[in-house]
View 1: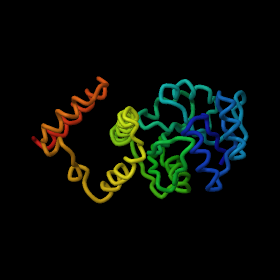
View 2: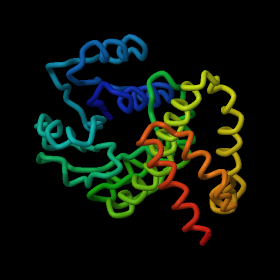
View 3: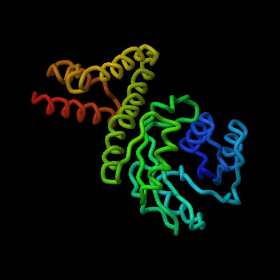
Length: 250
């Protein structure tokens, strides 16, 4: 099966790398950013182009959500399968006379960070059983965790991921701003962060909650509010504590 990946960002890079490491040959990686495409091509020995889209049986579109529809229009071949990797978009966002599908990897991707691809959950949706079988088998060569999922379910998977990953990482960034402002090395907090993440492998998140809000320690909460000079961080602090207190009915 001839496979082409469209895109040059984090997801495109990791999809290309995951396939390559598992011995899955890619006919091409295609996109607009020649500098990034060249880097991927040199590292993974995959042909690339910014102009000519190679003929393929399967095109996997790995671009930002707001670009998926427009990018999908460049695929003019009719007898092929096209998949996007978005968690929030339906397969119907793809515009073309081809078979439409979704090939969603549930993970946060950065080019500089190595990943264990076999642990990444993949969620597959297609228009027919034959294509479902094709994509499930393809994903199963990369990951041990492959499932079928329609768009309605996938929307909530993606929403949960935003809370569990994007929001948490933003809090790490805000925390580092505070530690940096006092010249406190952020490395001091890594064991705490690691333990917090590890704990929810064994305990329900709700049961693992600690801190002044769950204890309803108003003295500490007020002290912290006085220390925070950034208005956005103060709003986050108040909102998060209010949410914790509501959850535990304090």
